[in-house]
Length: 420
Image 1 (tube, helix red, strand yellow):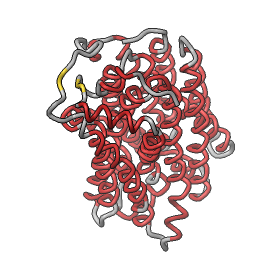
Image 2: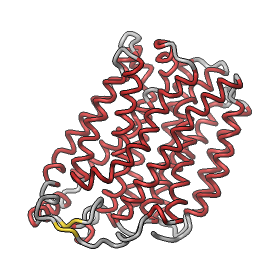
Image 3: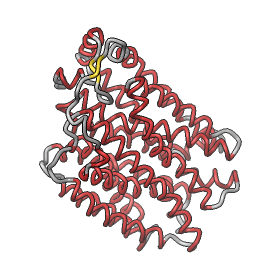
Image 4: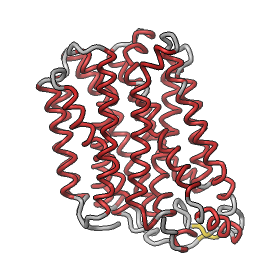
């Protein structure tokens, strides 16, 4: 793995700071053995969706336990996604004050706590734990692209593949094992969900060496320096809004599926265990898109063909769910999965590829994921409300086809060869 250029190494991803001399030496020593960084990135990424995906196969049981309506049930998955957006607002400030590595470590600890709070015996704790988990995942989501741009500037696209692939692997494991774990624990959905706090704890431990090393880069001897593009705001940049729009729309189509795909299938006669297996398969095949699309994106001057590919696959999958949801469920799950994985991989790659430096990548990441997840949070709630109002899934699925068309148009604009 190519070692980063010194200028990329020294200027922090989230703020315009130079490290202390001791921090420079420590950072160089760490990057001489990048496996430590790689393990930390992979373990953190495994946690980015596991807490969300583990809930979806169990949401009907959780709703029955607390007597929740369809709209209230949608909030079980909407609340964490809402705080994926709201948490993104505080990520840059926290990183500026404490450093990326420490914030990532604390986010993993907070995630473990949120998962445990979510299974306490009250509906308030169910939503409160989701709030904590969503905030923690937001911090991980927003800060990871800037860290990768800083520490792996020559391998940004391939590292994006690694961490998006790990993220989807974690979601796949969670989706596939939630129901079996529930059965293994004697029918306890609480124990099944709580299991994922262990993964967060292991990842937090893996970040401790980097937290210790990072102290040398953010101490009193650090001084402010001018960073490329630091004088302009991404919030006033048209290209930044195009990247943000694509992030928002692909997040919207993904979180509607995370929240409701098993329910759509069971409402059309499929057993709960089979629906859970289809959902796990959908999550598994996302790996193909998540690994492949960022690698292809890094080799292209324009990523417009990839935009057409991923939006077309997701649109075809939603159309299939509308026409014959249960009969060809595995086919629709495959089309949706490759498109979903490719969509998030492309959205994250566009953040890195459209940003001219690590500072801009961190700021663009914060903007796109804050706005993106605030928009996405409306998806599960709106789909649940439409279902409750109409008594079927036709209207929600037609709306999602409109989302796919809009994502195509916005993505084509974001994918042109330009930088911020």
